Image 1 (spheres, rainbow, N blue to C red):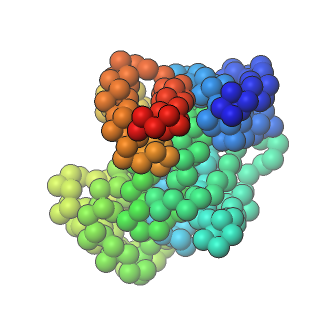
Image 2: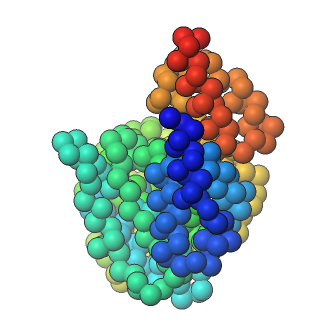
Image 3: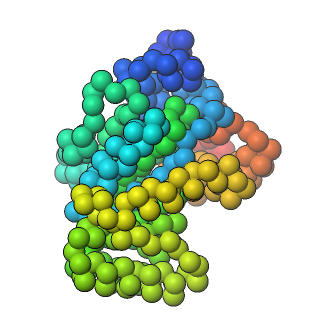
Length: 324
């Protein structure tokens, strides 16, 4: 079964390279994303994803916060600003899946205003597929591919409370959005949420005193919970208040993206993704069977997607013959 899957994937992968995707426009990128999502378990998709993994160029920004906070409005403003500077921007917008139908509205393409003819911006909608953290397993290779194509990649998550913490497993910089007068200050005290952001933004700054009070509460909660000085911004994407300061700070974060902290975070992200993938399919027995080998292989610089393909094949055979 695995061999026939690989044969079909080999045909779909013919001629597919990162260089070709970078120069091929939206249709070529959409085809590549569909390939790494649909053929995720194939050797051909793993090899292509590893090529993208080694060709990383983008700063990945995770944008999270509750529904209605204004994430899409903020993304629209960021897209406009960055495109005016000539930066190529990719967006992965994750919408919640229905528990009943497993489908998703995927409405971000409607909420985000982009020019269909502009090959410098691309919006990809994904369903969360029931993952509480808001990120389906296929989101990771999609992000890796877009990271190799664009200058900036934004990942917008579902925004469902403490489970938002999963955004840290894919983003270089996490921006948490809250809005004034929403009761979000009660959420600030939950440790899981306090561990999320590298940057915090109070949206709808035109709310006056209410917005300033929300900013003060947020700064206090972050200081108590983390002991770190997490930058907090009061921003209105419609009036422009505080927006330039946020853009400048994100630009400085991007400049530092080659530093050791980013490399450590990306290494941890790959390890977390691999462990989660194995656990979802084979449970604790699978982790116990390959956990040590996985860690050693990654520390030795193994290509993560082909490593996953190899481990899944090994575990599949072991379960078939009753070794596990």
